[in-house]
Amino acid sequence: MLFPAFDNQPVMGINLDREAAAWQARQPDAGAPEKPNPLLDPGICGQMVAQAHQRAGVAWSYGGYLENRSRLWRGSYLEKSGNFMHLGVDFNVPQGTAIVANFSAGLVVVDNDHDPDGGWGERIILRPDGLEQDVLLIYAHLQEIRFKPGDRIPAGAVLAEVGGPPHNGNWHPHLHVQAIRRAQFEAVLVNQFQELDGYGHPSEQASLSQSFPDPLPLVAPQLVSRR
Image: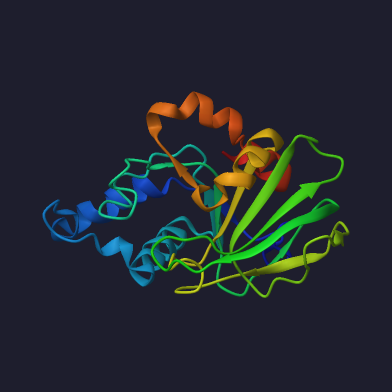
């Protein structure tokens, strides 16, 4: 289980952009294009997610792969490029939630993107054993990372905890998991690692989905059928 603390707790798939549209419709001033987007405040965004959980009667949620989040992140750093398509899966759980890998892996990268305007925060990159051998996994918006680069991580070990704002890139508390093909990772590692992002342009969905495949079957296969 990805989060032992939530084992057997009710969960749902969620589309945060649709939730944002519904939230803005309930308070039209908040969705006015000429006004700042209040959902860029991680506290307000976290409240929106918590309210969605409460309405559905669930303890946590997941989703977002290839989701266009142009309404959710209107006015953010993504506006300039139009790169609103989310390339990973978000798991919406509280700050401090322990994260466990259901596979053994080698730890390739541990770093901290300090950018408080939508950065990765603390991040690790794993090379899983026994899965798709050409795929690495990025876990982002973390705190309390338990391992260092070069470590072998046994299946079932606690990797880290879910971080919180502002140190997680100033997002609402959640775990972002993103898969990346080994060839793509090696291509960006040398010259473009600082440009690696969790979002891409919707017009490039076909190519991006090849470079960044769906991570859900790898990290939480029991949730795939719930979509």
